[in-house]
Length: 539
Image (cartoon, rainbow, N blue to C red; front, side):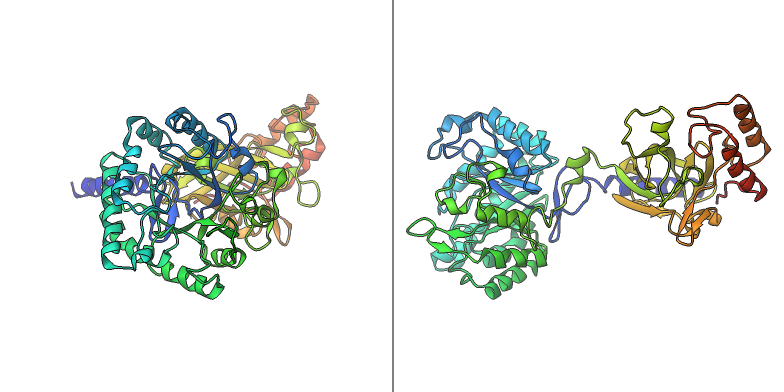
């Protein structure tokens, strides 16, 4: 009875462990932002106003933004209207759905923000604005895109420093946002909520101080804190002050992004101050802080636009710097895309490197067997053959846990995918090919989101050192197990002899060198490995 209880307890713990490895939303853990597949997301992207400020509902420039290398877009939206765009546009949630869908299609994490209370100081109006998210139609959209959506409650609302930095203003900020967060959570909104710093988004120090209390007030503990780096006065436009403010915020161990970084700051006139944004972006690169450039196009300050007409082919000097700068550019230092958006699930990826002895030609490349034997018709294909990749439990009797077919390329690379339920546990990797000896990894490998195993660079990477030496630094699986009984012997010879006597050609297992003909060149591999008593070695 104790044994049964132990097994049940073990399975229960394993089940809980597996289920905890994925979530339905993006979520935070300390200062890190994690995707549904637990991959760390460094949010780096662009601010963009779909349908706003002069653009028609037929124009969505998200595909152009995707060319920049960004992994996220902060979408400007309104509850009411804005200059040049009527309220009816924003009331049409089909348009919002289209914008969100386009982001997902182009593997961009959408951050949906409401712009109505920009630089305003009305807690009552902010509370009212936030109820926009609780409409049934909006809740349906949030549910639809919950796997990748972030909600930025309001742009740059409330004052603290500008109120004389009084304790009352600080308390009002914390209380107002705590109430809003709880209202949204009570409507089953579980996606991360982004909260902007006060004082037109600038006051990062206070935001960092308020963050622990706000997180404690959030039942989901899933908040991202965003400051807008118009810091000509706030940080003296000085790189040392900016670094100190970033370090202070990071010391709070909460998720921090710079929701707007720009090259120009307005005051009494547009584009009044030149901002030291390149120094700030270098700091963000060094400290691994996410950022969103303001903005893609159609701003009141043309110099602050990344594109002169919304097209990627027409980047401004500012846009070109953000995209192509060697130290922090979106293309040169490309942020990783969300694993969930890339693959549509949280499958485990195993990158393999291996060679097949019989198929080797020169320079550690292999025959293009699938093309040469008529299985594929693309003459330029790099596909060698398919292999069966299996994961076996690490404990005796080493039973099969997962299995998938994978494509082996000429250069020996191979990618295999397994269900997310394989996460966390350790497995032996077994590779089976139709005429080579099945080969096992020398040790069990603990499965994570991404895994790599190179059989080819050391003989001891195969269980029992069961590989053929190509040269002192490259090794291959033994050829000749034609009947796949895990030993190279006379039974394999019989199969080869039958096919050879019939002058067989094509995709035959007895064609050990992959040239499409069963002949004496194949016999050489069988004879050598038979004489050496080669067979599969497994735990």
